[in-house]
Image 1 (tube, rainbow, N blue to C red):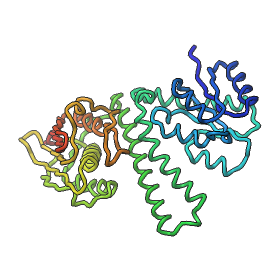
Image 2: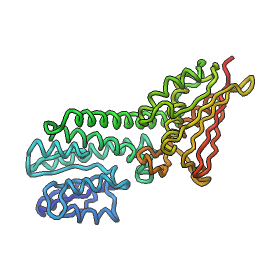
Image 3: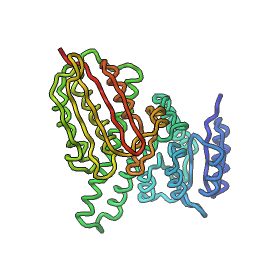
Image 4: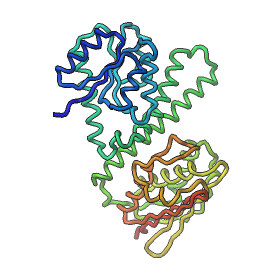
Length: 358
């Protein structure tokens, strides 16, 4: 039986020894450190399934240690439980707001600690099993895409809670706007993960693809995409003929959202993207989305999949190839075709063909 691994970080040797002995007897593999600095050295060569850490420690305290772990793409997925001798609401609140998974005040019962550890590891393993294609130990970018907006939300909330009375009305509104933007981004990432899993498991019904109008769908999503990218709607030039396509409006919306968003994020500042749509022949409609940004190398194009992390200096936070994967899957499921041509430093052209509804 494989043992779950626990890292215990506490400068009080007697507490560390008691926890280690108890968890070892409960069939855990345990390693210890007396402060955050020592713990980071342990993590260089050993990745635990969960971390239990005191807050008040010398050299590097628990909060500093947690921030370092949180900012590391390889370690950020590890469940983190804080211990502290001070039973103060502000400390507990600050710890949870910083992204810790749980909090336990000293003195505590060892059985309570074990119960929390078991629950956190079970939950984390369930997530890994449900999304086994997103093995976070091999593809930590998935967790990075979730953690980055989440931590942004928590940081702004923390600022408002602790110092709200010291900010001007305009500053508070800017915090609210930032929270909303990060929340929308997190929501979209989670929806895409769920959609990916459904596509992968073939549980979506594509048999009833009622007709949709590409021009109407484009005009519906354009304002939302431009707003989220903080650009004017004139950043997207379009010439789209109306037609009745054999794809649902919902699926066509997803395609437009992902491709327009990618086009804007890959484009250089002040560069526009071009969208055109016209009937190709009696059976198919051609949709073309072109940007004039950084483009892909041929090697990058070959490697694109759902867990690809693109190197975007402009918008590092939106790096997954998940959107492109979803678009390709939907187009294929609706009997269309997808092609992408790109040249590094010049831009990318994506061409789609959709069956026309008779």
